Amino acid sequence: MLGFVMKLGQFVDKVARGLTQLCVAIMVVAVVLQVIWRYFLGNPIIWAEELARYALVWMTFIGAAVALRAGQLACMDLVVNLFPVKIKRAIITVANLASFILLLLLLYYSVILVGEPSVVAQRSPAMRITMSYIYLAMPIGLGLMVIQSLLQLFSGIIGKGSEPQ
Image 1 (cartoon, helix red, strand yellow):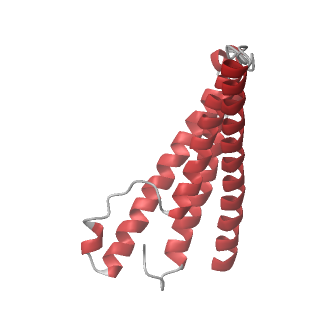
Image 2 (cartoon, rainbow, N blue to C red; image 1 turned 30 degrees about the vertical axis):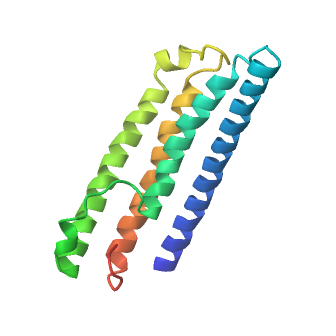
């Protein structure tokens, strides 16, 4: 069972990493094109800066799921590391459960936000796309984080023989 959980986590991580890399590539291309057109051709691309900004938003939310799996999100483990392994494991499990619940709440409200009429009706200034596409980064990124958080919680409970990080 733990093998399936690990494979699922790896798959979600691989997808999130790919999407994050795509966002970085979009940002780089948009900014390079903007610089070339603005400074060398004297005719700036109106939508390039906006595209780079929205790619940064998507990269941030999806990249958070990658950072969560890698254990690279900010955490205060100075005191936790002072405890014996069994207590440390219990504290980490409680913290993972609290994170999972918080992420579920954020996911729920982000889905509501994306569907708000004011968000759906709002258009981006340059590209004229609905802001729902931009705001959609929140539920997708949070959904990926919920999956990774649940998998961490599950593997922490089932994988009792392993040393907590």
